[in-house]
Image 1: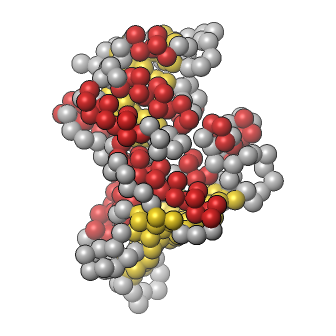
Image 2: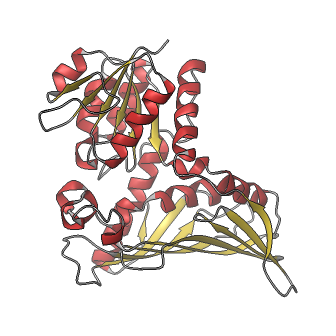
Image 3: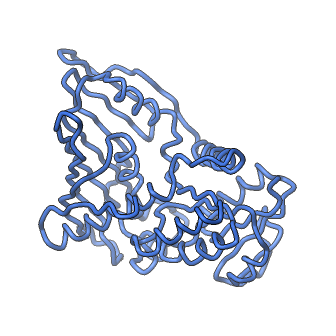
Length: 338
């Protein structure tokens, strides 16, 4: 039975995890670790630490790492060393450095390591993937993916310039903040072999990170030698919030809308899109499903759907994209540690 839980970081996502942890474990001792002193007890928490070693001394059985990405591995490594099961918010870190070491520590300590790419738990994305695997539109020819939302509108009650997304030293930027797309594209279509990328700041927003990313990703060829290509557009600038992925096949197209939870099909020779699946999720649904899966993996000692290797794979794509943008050339994606 899980009796001690730690939530590292108390930003918006940390608060969400704290609330869900209390919902799932009403009698557990749940404490938070934050860099600022706790002047008052956070709602749903039983205690508060401002020192990592004190938090480690609490000996949590489960910890959620939800502080800014540059600090994920510091907290995670210390906790993994005592066998704490880890749910680490995305991205796993800001670079691949130190990630294989964390994975090895978790393996040696028998600690579960799950990365918070919660979109994989959306029924609509799961159905989209299943239909593609069932060759609903035949052999795949191409993929188009786009995600965007105007950064100042993410949290209207806060100054966007002070948020993690806007600040390079906190791991911000469109590529890392919206790396869900990199994860689910790899999950659905396979390993990314190379990337051609352009990262830029197109707007006048007061940020020191990229607000626009254009990616061309080449996947590892299939058994017949066919190489699938995906184009992904990721940004902080568009006012019409969008999250869509369209797969184009020999027998039509299949489109997933991550906002409406709808999957649609356009048949070859057809005249319009037809709905094939619809599940409008609520904000907490995928996070709650993520938590339940995490707890199931701990209980049954099985590997999570999104483990350390998946988080590392995303960071390897990010690294290749950054190098490609700097060089202007296509860059191979490293696979060390996978």
